[in-house]
Image 1 (tube, rainbow, N blue to C red):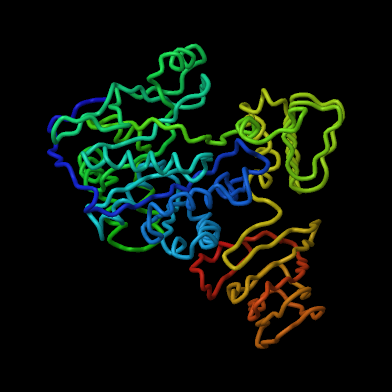
Image 2 (cartoon, rainbow, N blue to C red):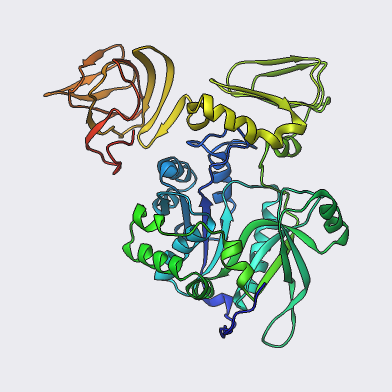
Length: 495
């Protein structure tokens, strides 16, 4: 780490006098868990190790350490409404504090915007930053580490969580510790906190084995705790463009960042942009059953297996088969004599590869994207702010969907230039604007909407509205929409 030319004076802070805040980073869009994870439904929005999604688990383990209205989540604009919906299911107040980036610029701009927003109302806040797509097995240990990291933050340090390595992993960055951290006010060591000697990039296997044997190296899990004033002071000094943009965004108060601001920002992680430039960086070693669930192999290692070493999810049957990952989202996977394989099946795609090759999945996904791009972007079921739709069947000049509209929700007022639609209600009550008419339809009733007719679908009832939509026409993609009114503030080309 390089030393700054002018050392800022940072006075210790009494923790009893500050409030605790948290920032959840939910902007990832990785493809290492394809075909389950796709650009429209990335890892953090999936339930991979329990009944709740990784995002929901992340939010839930912040309590009771942080108040509900002290948690800010940053995500991509494409995922904004799904993130809001998932957080609302955990605690309604969380959905009101979601910030949406128009494009990804790595972790530092996202963190900067959230911290500037927090500091606008509480400049002395102590902020914890946590990834939304990691698994934590021991929540009590996580919360205890958070408490310890705040002691270092009070001294003006940027404090990281250092995961004690359990294997010579080559997929993580490492942090080398340099002995106990001593407090400024009396020379006493801060229990459970160590100074950082250096950061190490993802090592090769030989170096990883050496780090594991040395005992003073930890995995960098991408979790940080710091004072808002310290962070912003460093940001202004080392990354003035990001600092200025964060202040502008925070002062506007808008939840969606203008694209022109983000387009001018560098693609920069907090590690390169601040941590490696800082003098006062600390690490809190912790054992909390952490995994980034970054591959199907990581999920296999984390989940429970049967007596033959098979990890089974959904409808899966393994006969004379050993050490496999079998994951079914739709239909039955049945194996006979299979060894050491990963098989993942969704409604529209199946992935099969040796478990030892799942680290190379990016090669396969790149080929799929080139030949079947839509299978890397969306699932057959697509979430919308008003509910969801599922593509049941499609062919030349027709498409059949099941649409579910949440109680009290409504779609935009819109027209289509290239398709007509026939709606059949199968459950609930629909209020429909169709041209100059407004009608109410109930189960087994239907209506026809010619192309270029203004129309809107609304659920005025208390149960989900379900309809079957039959589209017909020469062009049936989701961008055939001209929107006149939308309660969710979406642009005309957004479905």
